[in-house]
Length: 212
Image (cartoon, rainbow, N blue to C red; front, side, top):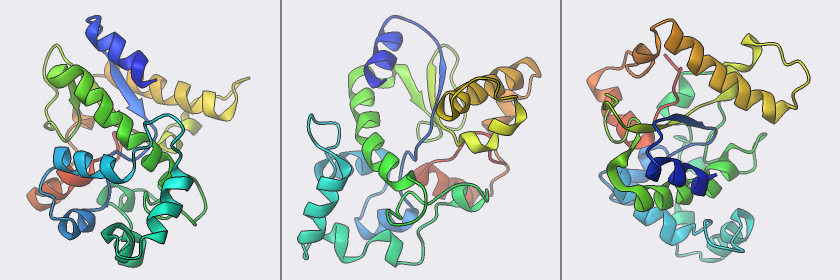
């Protein structure tokens, strides 16, 4: 998928792509690792979780890090801090924490598998792709846009028909984006009603499009 998106960007296609996994970790992680921006987080994350490399899987990396008792990544894990949820996850009852591997759902595994591919894609296409909201809340004209989505917000709005669950999640997300654009309401989704302090947090943690 990352390679397909890269090719679309380099080919001049303008698109809005919604990806169903967390783009970042809770703000407490940034303080613990002395990171002040999302690009710095990506660089640091990939050194510990190189899950974009062939043959590298989340479970194996996690086991290796857990054996390193002096590793900052396991000495004070986000799920032990009481701050496992990002702000955008607190604003919806459906989202799971990107930190809790042993809880119901696969949000943590999906995020830890997918985040390195975001960096790979960013390295491949540069500023021709806008990662919202990290690159700014306003979406520039003429650029393709990558956003985090949570399909459970949209899936019940549209009949499932004969689609498999994952297929319907993708359909419902794309259909919702198209519906919002047709209603002239999509632009407002890029401006959730956050306070300045909440915006500062979301610019590190990320935000799910459609959560308001």
